[in-house]
Every structure is written in structure tokens, then in C-alpha cells.
Amino acid sequence: PALPGAPAASAHPLPPAPLFSRFLCTPLAAACPSGAEQGDAAAGEREELLLLQSTAEQLRQTALQQEARIRADQDTIRELTGKLGRCESGLPRGLQDAGPRRDAMADGPWDSPALILELEDAVRALRDRLDRIEQELPARVNFSAAPAPAPAVPTALNTKMDELEGQLLAKVLALEKERVALSHNSQRQRQEVEKELDALQDRVAGLEHGSSAYSPADAFKISIPIRNNYMYARVRKALPELYAFTVCMWLRSRSGGSGQGTPFSYSVPGQANEIVLLEAGHDPMELLINDKVAQLPLSLKDNGWHHICIAWTTRDGLWSAYQDGELQGSGENLAAWHPIKPHGILILGQEQDTLGGRFDATQAFVGDIAQFNLWDHALTPAQVLGIANCTGPLLGNVLPWEDKLVEAFGGAKKTTFDVCKGRAKA
Image (cartoon, rainbow, N blue to C red):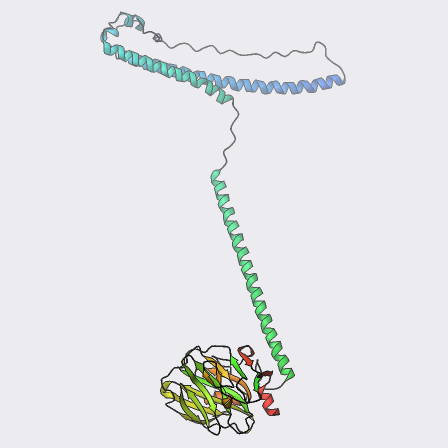
């Protein structure tokens, strides 16, 4: 007997199912209109005819698709039937006798448990295959009737376009940065050119107002009219440690022959006489460095302007003294190998007995001081001569003569003065 739920085996495939056609019936008007109504009716009939033709073409395409699906299903059924026949061919001899398979299978022995399990597996597989086919048929029909999907967007082209847009944007940003940088550079260059033009205009204006070969930027002088212990000027800038120096200044003494006093003194903590230029009474002018003394062959007794330069180096204590551009004397062993200590106090017009104070009126300078400059090396004789004759002006690299660096105290006066012009008038 056949297994429960199993399809009956057949030696011949089932005939194809008949193909039916559907007809569309359209009612027609009983009477034919005339005139304009006939023209409108004719236009409507043409549109309806076109619609009917389109519908008929769609139905024909659907019928062709259904026919193709049915043929595919018939082929599948034939394939399954062939597989079932191959399964049956594996039965014992008693089950493969001639005659209809239904009778042979009915008359054969079904005692073998292995045979029963094999047949059950084959039937289960066929049933699963038929279920899958039945599930796929509606999906295929619906898919054939659905409209064609829109073409996929070419993602590769979009990616390339995005990359090109990114590169273009980066290039635009780089060009914008370069433009801004060029604008800033051009603005800075324009400012520098304007500054140079202003400086040139100032120089031209200075040349137009005076023909002097030497016109210092800060032309002023310190005047101490009487001898006392409270008039002086102080330099606000601290000095560094020095192993050599040159100090130059313009001096005009008004002492009346009783000694020139102290044009300048420099003291440091622990040493009041680190550097001192002094002429006391009828003694010659002296240079003190760390309380070591050298007499200088200089004279300022004519009440006129004189240019004084003193150079010194710690190596062997060498010194040189110039007046009005000419070398007046030199020597050695003046505080040899002693460096000038830094961070002291520099006073013009008074001698310091302590750091920055205890002035003595008998050692005070009376007169005028101008163009006090200090360098950290020894100037050459040619440089000294250029400063003295107003042809080669130089400002000190350690201490330049500037109005903001010099402050007057006690009644000492600071007035505008150009020494190269004023000494000629004096």
C-alpha cells in the first residue's frame, strides 16, 4: 500500500493543463450620433481603441509569460518524476517485476526497514521540492508584472566626482591662503617703504635747515654753573662687565684755573673708585681704575670746548689719552687684568665716596658736558679723530649719548646743544 501523504507514482507524465483566454466586452451605443457629436465620438473611439490595443498587448505579454512559467513547471515535474523513477530503481528484484509500478509496489515485500526509511526520505524530499515550487510561482508572476526597476546609480562615478570636488576645494583654499599671505607681505613692504621715505624726508629737511657735516640725533648738554655738592647728572643705564673700554666726551671747564674737578665717576658695590676722571687743585688730571692711578697729560684751562677720549684694556693695563683728536699720552700697568665690574652707578659732575653719594664740593666739576659715549673696546686713532673733527660721528655701543638716558639733579641744567655748531660760536 502507498505511504500516507505520498503522491501516486505514474509511469507517464501528466498532460499539460489547458490554456484559457479571456475576452473583454465593450457596450456600444444603440444609435449613431450625427454632426459634432459624431466627431467627438470618433475621437473618443480612437482613444478607446488605442487603450484596448495597449491592454490587449499587455494581456498577450502576460499570457506568453504564464505559458513560459507553465512550461518551466512541466519540466520541473518531469525532472521530479525521473528522480522518483531512479529512487524506485533501487528497490529489490521482487519490487521491480514487469507491469504497472503501482501493482508491483503493492505486491512487493515491505518487510525491510531500510527500504521503508529510504522511501520515506525520497517522498519527503519530493514534497519539500513541490512546496518550494508552489511558493516561488506567485513571486515569479508578481515579479513579471512589476515595473522595471530604475537603473542603479553609478557609485564609482559619484565617488570620482566627490574626489575631484574635494581636490578643487582644497586648491581654492590654498589659493585663498596664498592671496592673503601675499596681501600681508605687500602691506608690510609698503609700510617699510613708507618708513624709509619718511626717514629720507627727515634727512632732507635736516640738510635744508643746516649744512653741518655732523648733526647728532640727541644734541644736548649738561651745564653745572657753580661748584657745589648737589648739582650733577646721573646715567640711567647700567654697565655690563668690561674688559676694555673707550670713553669720549666734549668738555668746557669754567673752574677759573683752580682744578677741573670730576667730569665723571663710576662706582660699584664695594668700590667707590671703579672708574674716575679727576683733576683736583693744581694737580694734573688723573684716571683712577679700581683705586689705581695714572696721570694724563690733558689740559682744559682755557675755558674752551675740548674733545677728550680715554681708552683702556685690562690686558697689561694699557691706556691711551686723546685731546681734540690727537694722542697726548699712553701707558701700562693700570689695574692690569682687572675687569670693570657691572651694575654700578655712573655720575656726571661729581666724585662718589660711596655708591651714588657723599659728594665733595671741592671735587665737583664746573662747566658743560656733551656727547658722553662709552664703548666696550678701544677705538682706533682714526675713529677718535673723526669724532673730534665732527666728520665721523659714532655713538657708544654700551652707553650712547641720549636724552632719555641722562637725568639732571640739584639745579644742573639739560639744554639743547649741538657741539659741532656751538663750539664754533663760543
